Image (cartoon, rainbow, N blue to C red; front, side):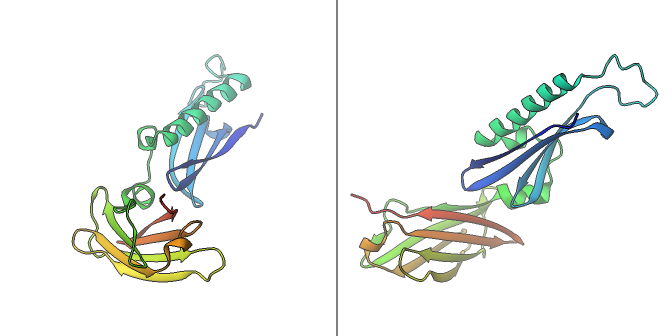
Length: 199
């Protein structure tokens, strides 16, 4: 019997695709986590005997038990993602891939006050593993209904901070969005911010 589970789950701005399956040839129940098509980690548990010489079968799980165990493992990973604790349940995290998704971060510092004097001013900080990412390159895409997207770039200072200004009327901010991509050390992080007018 072949069975498996596939679920997309979102945490922050990242969509994780979680795929669980029983690997009969390896006697494994395996869950893989993908981001943008790239596997960032796995969780696996064995069932039955690992030695081919043991053919008694008394330690092997039936299909219903395997499916239940796989379902619980799948749910465990989904819950960990929702709680931001994926690293805690992975067996073999891929360090390079995890760094791409987890360690590089873009923080919006002035989300409460971004518009003044006909300018949208955005102050950001790029960090890698919690430390400043000096020299990180940021690309911004400002989009609003009925207008062509506007692109601009900035480079983070020694503290990982960067600022952009876009001349735009405050009335145009509702329904506008800003996509920010940070590049640092060969890694990228993308964040989408939705703008709305404060009352």
